[in-house]
Image 1 (cartoon, helix red, strand yellow):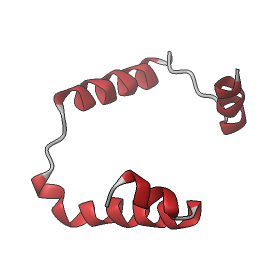
Image 2 (cartoon, rainbow, N blue to C red):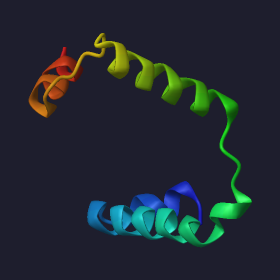
Image 3 (spheres, helix red, strand yellow):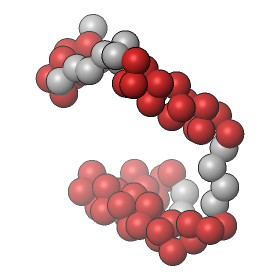
Amino acid sequence: MNISELKKMSTIERLQAMEALWDSFLYEIDEIETPEWHEKVLRARKEKIANGTAKFISLSELKKSRQQ
């Protein structure tokens, strides 16, 4: 499948195809190696939460920040 074929699909069809593709990875989890940088990001986020410096925002705040 290529981009031109994907563009012929409706938004709903593309979302469903994407969801099915992601779901297919569940059965291959042992074949996928997590990159080292993922581990570093998660550790840093956990550390911020543990020491009280993490900043949490609502979904509406996130959406507003992305519109600017």
